[in-house]
Length: 342
Ligand code: NAD
Image (cartoon, rainbow, N blue to C red; front, side):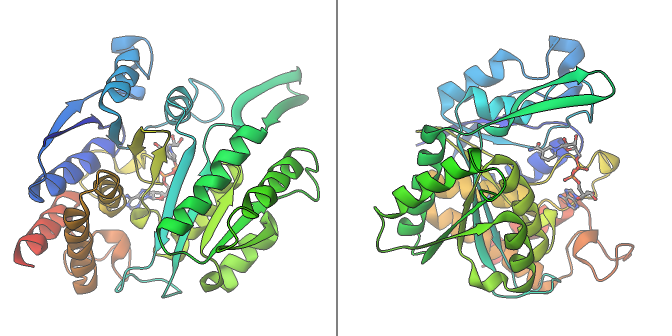
Protein backbone atom coordinates (compact mmCIF):
# COMPACT_ATOMS: atom_id res chain seq x y z
CA UNK A 1 0.00 0.00 0.00
CA UNK A 2 1.31 3.45 -0.95
CA UNK A 3 0.71 6.21 1.59
CA UNK A 4 -0.35 9.51 0.05
CA UNK A 5 0.90 12.25 2.36
CA UNK A 6 0.59 16.04 2.09
CA UNK A 7 4.12 17.44 2.23
CA UNK A 8 4.46 21.09 3.26
CA UNK A 9 8.08 22.30 2.97
CA UNK A 10 7.24 25.59 4.75
CA UNK A 11 9.69 28.50 4.71
CA UNK A 12 12.96 29.60 6.34
CA UNK A 13 14.92 26.40 7.03
CA UNK A 14 11.73 24.35 6.44
CA UNK A 15 12.40 23.22 2.84
CA UNK A 16 15.88 21.81 3.57
CA UNK A 17 14.64 20.04 6.74
CA UNK A 18 11.65 18.54 4.94
CA UNK A 19 13.86 17.40 2.05
CA UNK A 20 16.20 15.65 4.53
CA UNK A 21 13.17 14.02 6.19
CA UNK A 22 11.66 12.91 2.88
CA UNK A 23 14.93 11.23 1.88
CA UNK A 24 15.22 9.36 5.20
CA UNK A 25 11.58 8.21 5.08
CA UNK A 26 11.95 6.98 1.51
CA UNK A 27 15.10 5.06 2.49
CA UNK A 28 12.95 2.93 4.83
CA UNK A 29 11.34 1.35 1.76
CA UNK A 30 7.84 2.32 2.95
CA UNK A 31 6.11 3.54 -0.22
CA UNK A 32 5.05 7.21 -0.10
CA UNK A 33 3.42 9.43 -2.65
CA UNK A 34 4.03 13.05 -1.70
CA UNK A 35 1.39 15.66 -2.41
CA UNK A 36 3.60 18.77 -2.15
CA UNK A 37 1.75 21.91 -1.01
CA UNK A 38 3.16 25.40 -0.61
CA UNK A 39 2.35 27.52 2.44
CA UNK A 40 4.06 30.30 4.39
CA UNK A 41 5.51 33.76 3.94
CA UNK A 42 7.09 32.89 0.58
CA UNK A 43 3.74 32.18 -1.13
CA UNK A 44 1.93 35.35 0.00
CA UNK A 45 2.62 37.13 -3.31
CA UNK A 46 1.59 34.17 -5.43
CA UNK A 47 -1.67 33.23 -3.66
CA UNK A 48 -2.52 36.37 -1.63
CA UNK A 49 -2.59 34.23 1.53
CA UNK A 50 0.08 32.26 3.42
CA UNK A 51 -2.36 29.33 3.79
CA UNK A 52 -4.02 28.59 0.43
CA UNK A 53 -7.25 26.55 0.63
CA UNK A 54 -5.59 23.86 -1.55
CA UNK A 55 -3.26 23.00 1.37
CA UNK A 56 -6.18 22.32 3.72
CA UNK A 57 -8.09 20.41 1.01
CA UNK A 58 -5.05 18.21 0.39
CA UNK A 59 -4.71 17.30 4.10
CA UNK A 60 -8.48 16.72 4.41
CA UNK A 61 -8.22 14.29 1.50
CA UNK A 62 -4.99 12.51 2.46
CA UNK A 63 -5.70 12.59 6.24
CA UNK A 64 -1.92 12.77 6.92
CA UNK A 65 0.54 15.63 6.50
CA UNK A 66 4.21 16.25 7.17
CA UNK A 67 5.40 19.83 7.42
CA UNK A 68 8.38 22.05 7.96
CA UNK A 69 8.20 25.16 10.12
CA UNK A 70 6.52 28.32 8.87
CA UNK A 71 7.47 31.89 9.87
CA UNK A 72 4.98 34.13 11.66
CA UNK A 73 5.72 37.88 11.71
CA UNK A 74 6.15 39.25 15.25
CA UNK A 75 3.74 41.98 16.44
CA UNK A 76 2.20 42.76 13.03
CA UNK A 77 1.41 41.00 9.76
CA UNK A 78 -0.55 37.84 9.03
CA UNK A 79 -1.64 35.47 11.78
CA UNK A 80 0.19 32.19 12.32
CA UNK A 81 -0.29 29.68 9.49
CA UNK A 82 0.55 26.90 11.95
CA UNK A 83 -2.19 27.94 14.36
CA UNK A 84 -4.71 28.47 11.52
CA UNK A 85 -3.98 25.02 10.11
CA UNK A 86 -4.45 23.30 13.48
CA UNK A 87 -7.71 25.17 14.04
CA UNK A 88 -9.12 24.66 10.51
CA UNK A 89 -8.54 20.89 10.67
CA UNK A 90 -9.47 20.60 14.36
CA UNK A 91 -6.09 19.02 15.18
CA UNK A 92 -6.80 19.41 18.87
CA UNK A 93 -3.81 17.50 20.26
CA UNK A 94 -0.23 18.71 20.03
CA UNK A 95 1.87 15.73 21.07
CA UNK A 96 5.45 16.68 21.95
CA UNK A 97 7.70 13.88 23.23
CA UNK A 98 11.03 14.85 24.82
CA UNK A 99 13.33 11.88 25.10
CA UNK A 100 17.03 11.87 25.83
CA UNK A 101 19.19 10.16 23.20
CA UNK A 102 22.51 8.78 24.42
CA UNK A 103 25.36 10.99 23.26
CA UNK A 104 23.42 14.25 23.28
CA UNK A 105 25.10 16.87 25.44
CA UNK A 106 22.54 17.75 28.09
CA UNK A 107 22.34 18.17 31.85
CA UNK A 108 20.18 15.07 32.24
CA UNK A 109 19.93 11.48 31.13
CA UNK A 110 16.96 9.10 31.34
CA UNK A 111 14.48 11.79 30.34
CA UNK A 112 11.36 10.43 28.69
CA UNK A 113 8.60 13.02 28.91
CA UNK A 114 5.55 13.61 26.74
CA UNK A 115 3.76 16.96 26.64
CA UNK A 116 0.14 16.79 25.48
CA UNK A 117 -0.81 20.35 24.62
CA UNK A 118 -4.31 21.54 23.80
CA UNK A 119 -4.04 22.92 20.29
CA UNK A 120 -7.21 24.83 19.36
CA UNK A 121 -8.27 27.16 22.18
CA UNK A 122 -6.77 29.01 25.20
CA UNK A 123 -4.81 32.20 24.44
CA UNK A 124 -4.31 31.04 20.85
CA UNK A 125 -7.87 31.85 19.72
CA UNK A 126 -6.35 35.19 18.69
CA UNK A 127 -9.18 37.37 20.00
CA UNK A 128 -7.41 40.56 21.07
CA UNK A 129 -7.85 44.25 20.48
CA UNK A 130 -6.73 47.70 21.52
CA UNK A 131 -8.82 49.22 24.30
CA UNK A 132 -6.97 52.54 23.94
CA UNK A 133 -4.41 52.45 21.11
CA UNK A 134 -0.89 52.49 22.50
CA UNK A 135 -2.16 52.49 26.09
CA UNK A 136 -4.19 49.38 26.80
CA UNK A 137 -4.93 46.14 25.01
CA UNK A 138 -7.02 43.09 25.81
CA UNK A 139 -6.86 39.39 24.88
CA UNK A 140 -9.47 36.71 25.47
CA UNK A 141 -8.63 33.22 26.65
CA UNK A 142 -11.20 30.56 25.85
CA UNK A 143 -11.38 27.25 27.70
CA UNK A 144 -14.27 24.87 27.09
CA UNK A 145 -15.41 21.66 28.75
CA UNK A 146 -15.33 19.91 25.36
CA UNK A 147 -11.79 21.11 24.57
CA UNK A 148 -10.51 20.21 28.03
CA UNK A 149 -12.23 16.84 28.12
CA UNK A 150 -10.91 15.59 24.81
CA UNK A 151 -7.30 16.66 25.46
CA UNK A 152 -7.19 15.13 28.95
CA UNK A 153 -8.80 11.95 27.62
CA UNK A 154 -6.17 11.82 24.86
CA UNK A 155 -3.42 12.07 27.52
CA UNK A 156 -4.88 9.18 29.54
CA UNK A 157 -5.49 7.01 26.47
CA UNK A 158 -1.92 7.74 25.32
CA UNK A 159 -0.62 6.80 28.77
CA UNK A 160 -2.54 3.53 28.72
CA UNK A 161 -1.53 2.56 25.19
CA UNK A 162 2.13 3.39 25.75
CA UNK A 163 2.64 1.82 29.18
CA UNK A 164 2.97 5.16 30.98
CA UNK A 165 2.39 5.41 34.72
CA UNK A 166 1.30 8.98 35.44
CA UNK A 167 -0.51 12.01 33.98
CA UNK A 168 0.19 15.48 35.39
CA UNK A 169 -2.28 18.29 34.59
CA UNK A 170 -0.57 21.70 34.47
CA UNK A 171 -2.59 24.88 35.12
CA UNK A 172 -2.73 28.24 36.90
CA UNK A 173 -6.06 27.71 38.63
CA UNK A 174 -4.94 29.66 41.72
CA UNK A 175 -5.03 32.87 39.65
CA UNK A 176 -7.08 32.02 36.54
CA UNK A 177 -9.79 30.52 38.72
CA UNK A 178 -12.49 30.37 36.05
CA UNK A 179 -10.63 29.25 32.91
CA UNK A 180 -7.92 27.10 34.47
CA UNK A 181 -10.44 26.13 37.13
CA UNK A 182 -12.66 24.61 34.42
CA UNK A 183 -9.70 22.80 32.83
CA UNK A 184 -8.55 21.37 36.17
CA UNK A 185 -12.07 20.36 37.22
CA UNK A 186 -12.60 18.47 33.96
CA UNK A 187 -9.14 16.87 34.26
CA UNK A 188 -10.05 15.55 37.73
CA UNK A 189 -13.34 14.14 36.40
CA UNK A 190 -11.64 12.37 33.48
CA UNK A 191 -8.88 11.04 35.75
CA UNK A 192 -11.47 9.16 37.82
CA UNK A 193 -12.23 7.04 34.74
CA UNK A 194 -8.59 5.87 34.59
CA UNK A 195 -7.85 4.37 38.02
CA UNK A 196 -4.92 2.40 36.55
CA UNK A 197 -3.02 5.65 35.77
CA UNK A 198 -1.75 7.92 38.55
CA UNK A 199 -2.99 11.51 38.34
CA UNK A 200 -1.69 14.71 39.89
CA UNK A 201 -1.75 18.41 39.08
CA UNK A 202 0.83 21.20 39.27
CA UNK A 203 0.70 24.98 39.00
CA UNK A 204 2.62 25.94 35.87
CA UNK A 205 5.36 28.07 37.47
CA UNK A 206 6.13 25.38 40.03
CA UNK A 207 6.04 22.79 37.23
CA UNK A 208 8.76 24.66 35.31
CA UNK A 209 11.00 24.71 38.38
CA UNK A 210 10.33 21.03 39.10
CA UNK A 211 11.08 20.06 35.49
CA UNK A 212 14.48 21.73 35.75
CA UNK A 213 15.28 20.11 39.12
CA UNK A 214 13.63 16.67 38.92
CA UNK A 215 12.46 15.96 35.36
CA UNK A 216 12.65 12.18 35.89
CA UNK A 217 9.67 12.41 38.25
CA UNK A 218 7.31 13.32 35.41
CA UNK A 219 5.83 11.24 32.62
CA UNK A 220 2.82 12.51 30.59
CA UNK A 221 2.03 16.21 31.04
CA UNK A 222 -1.30 17.58 29.83
CA UNK A 223 -1.99 21.29 29.66
CA UNK A 224 -3.65 24.20 27.89
CA UNK A 225 -2.34 25.77 24.69
CA UNK A 226 0.06 28.54 25.80
CA UNK A 227 1.41 26.68 28.83
CA UNK A 228 1.96 23.65 26.59
CA UNK A 229 3.90 25.75 24.11
CA UNK A 230 6.24 27.03 26.82
CA UNK A 231 6.58 23.82 28.85
CA UNK A 232 7.33 21.76 25.71
CA UNK A 233 10.17 24.11 24.69
CA UNK A 234 11.51 23.77 28.24
CA UNK A 235 11.34 19.98 27.90
CA UNK A 236 13.19 20.13 24.55
CA UNK A 237 15.93 22.04 26.38
CA UNK A 238 16.22 19.13 28.83
CA UNK A 239 17.02 16.69 26.03
CA UNK A 240 19.46 18.73 23.94
CA UNK A 241 17.49 21.61 22.46
CA UNK A 242 14.97 22.38 19.76
CA UNK A 243 16.95 20.45 17.13
CA UNK A 244 15.94 17.23 18.91
CA UNK A 245 12.22 17.81 19.60
CA UNK A 246 9.55 16.30 17.34
CA UNK A 247 5.82 16.96 17.35
CA UNK A 248 2.46 15.81 16.02
CA UNK A 249 -0.84 17.63 15.61
CA UNK A 250 -3.60 15.05 15.91
CA UNK A 251 -7.38 15.24 15.44
CA UNK A 252 -9.98 12.54 14.90
CA UNK A 253 -8.60 10.43 12.04
CA UNK A 254 -6.36 13.22 10.75
CA UNK A 255 -2.81 14.30 11.70
CA UNK A 256 -0.01 16.67 10.68
CA UNK A 257 3.54 16.03 11.87
CA UNK A 258 6.05 18.85 12.43
CA UNK A 259 8.98 19.67 14.73
CA UNK A 260 8.51 21.79 17.87
CA UNK A 261 10.97 24.39 16.59
CA UNK A 262 10.35 27.30 14.27
CA UNK A 263 11.80 28.32 10.91
CA UNK A 264 15.19 29.56 12.29
CA UNK A 265 15.20 32.14 9.45
CA UNK A 266 18.80 33.29 10.01
CA UNK A 267 20.01 29.86 8.84
CA UNK A 268 17.66 29.55 5.84
CA UNK A 269 19.35 28.06 2.78
CA UNK A 270 22.62 27.48 4.67
CA UNK A 271 22.38 23.67 5.07
CA UNK A 272 23.19 24.20 8.74
CA UNK A 273 20.41 23.30 11.19
CA UNK A 274 19.72 19.94 12.79
CA UNK A 275 17.24 17.78 10.84
CA UNK A 276 16.65 15.37 13.78
CA UNK A 277 13.48 17.05 15.11
CA UNK A 278 11.89 17.00 11.67
CA UNK A 279 13.00 13.43 10.98
CA UNK A 280 11.72 12.30 14.41
CA UNK A 281 8.40 13.94 13.49
CA UNK A 282 8.50 11.62 10.47
CA UNK A 283 9.10 8.72 12.88
CA UNK A 284 5.95 9.75 14.79
CA UNK A 285 4.16 9.70 11.43
CA UNK A 286 5.44 6.19 10.66
CA UNK A 287 4.14 4.99 14.04
CA UNK A 288 0.78 6.70 13.42
CA UNK A 289 0.58 4.85 10.09
CA UNK A 290 1.35 1.54 11.83
CA UNK A 291 4.83 1.23 10.25
CA UNK A 292 6.51 0.23 13.51
CA UNK A 293 9.53 -1.57 12.01
CA UNK A 294 10.41 1.37 9.75
CA UNK A 295 9.94 3.78 12.68
CA UNK A 296 12.25 1.70 14.88
CA UNK A 297 14.88 1.53 12.12
CA UNK A 298 14.96 5.32 11.66
CA UNK A 299 15.02 5.89 15.42
CA UNK A 300 17.88 3.42 15.90
CA UNK A 301 19.81 5.00 13.01
CA UNK A 302 19.43 8.46 14.57
CA UNK A 303 20.59 7.03 17.92
CA UNK A 304 23.66 5.49 16.23
CA UNK A 305 24.62 8.72 14.43
CA UNK A 306 24.13 10.80 17.58
CA UNK A 307 26.06 8.34 19.77
CA UNK A 308 28.99 8.41 17.34
CA UNK A 309 28.88 12.21 17.39
CA UNK A 310 30.77 12.59 14.13
CA UNK A 311 28.21 13.37 11.42
CA UNK A 312 26.09 15.75 13.47
CA UNK A 313 25.19 19.41 13.06
CA UNK A 314 26.77 22.33 14.94
CA UNK A 315 24.24 22.33 17.80
CA UNK A 316 25.31 18.81 18.82
CA UNK A 317 29.03 19.50 18.91
CA UNK A 318 30.90 20.58 22.09
CA UNK A 319 31.12 24.16 20.78
CA UNK A 320 28.87 26.00 18.33
CA UNK A 321 31.77 26.84 15.98
CA UNK A 322 33.20 23.31 15.87
CA UNK A 323 34.71 22.94 12.37
CA UNK A 324 33.84 19.22 12.26
CA UNK A 325 30.07 19.89 12.30
CA UNK A 326 28.27 18.64 9.20
CA UNK A 327 25.30 20.18 7.38
CA UNK A 328 21.59 19.27 7.42
CA UNK A 329 21.76 17.04 4.33
CA UNK A 330 25.02 15.33 5.41
CA UNK A 331 23.47 14.39 8.74
CA UNK A 332 20.50 12.92 6.83
CA UNK A 333 22.99 10.98 4.63
CA UNK A 334 24.62 9.56 7.78
CA UNK A 335 21.22 8.49 9.17
CA UNK A 336 20.38 6.75 5.88
CA UNK A 337 23.79 5.04 5.86
CA UNK A 338 23.32 3.89 9.48
CA UNK A 339 19.91 2.48 8.54
CA UNK A 340 21.38 0.53 5.64
CA UNK A 341 24.25 -0.95 7.66
CA UNK A 342 22.17 -1.91 10.72
P1 NAD B 1 13.09 28.93 16.28
O1 NAD B 1 12.65 27.60 16.79
O2 NAD B 1 13.06 29.12 14.81
O3 NAD B 1 14.57 29.21 16.80
C1 NAD B 1 14.90 29.28 18.19
C2 NAD B 1 16.37 28.93 18.37
O4 NAD B 1 16.58 27.54 18.13
C3 NAD B 1 17.30 29.65 17.39
O5 NAD B 1 18.51 29.90 18.02
C4 NAD B 1 17.46 28.64 16.27
O6 NAD B 1 18.64 28.82 15.53
C5 NAD B 1 17.45 27.33 17.05
N1 NAD B 1 16.93 26.24 16.23
C6 NAD B 1 15.68 26.10 15.75
N2 NAD B 1 15.57 25.00 15.04
C7 NAD B 1 16.78 24.40 15.05
C8 NAD B 1 17.31 23.22 14.47
N3 NAD B 1 16.55 22.41 13.70
N4 NAD B 1 18.61 22.92 14.66
C9 NAD B 1 19.39 23.70 15.41
N5 NAD B 1 18.96 24.84 16.00
C10 NAD B 1 17.66 25.19 15.81
O7 NAD B 1 12.19 30.00 17.05
P2 NAD B 1 12.02 31.56 16.84
O8 NAD B 1 13.31 32.19 16.43
O9 NAD B 1 11.32 32.01 18.04
O10 NAD B 1 10.99 31.66 15.62
C11 NAD B 1 11.35 31.81 14.26
C12 NAD B 1 10.08 31.78 13.43
O11 NAD B 1 9.49 30.46 13.48
C13 NAD B 1 9.00 32.74 13.94
O12 NAD B 1 8.42 33.35 12.81
C14 NAD B 1 8.00 31.83 14.64
O13 NAD B 1 6.70 32.34 14.63
C15 NAD B 1 8.10 30.58 13.80
N6 NAD B 1 7.67 29.34 14.48
C16 NAD B 1 7.04 28.42 13.72
C17 NAD B 1 6.67 27.21 14.28
C18 NAD B 1 6.00 26.19 13.40
O14 NAD B 1 6.12 26.26 12.19
N7 NAD B 1 5.27 25.25 13.95
C19 NAD B 1 6.97 26.93 15.63
C20 NAD B 1 7.66 27.89 16.38
C21 NAD B 1 8.01 29.10 15.79
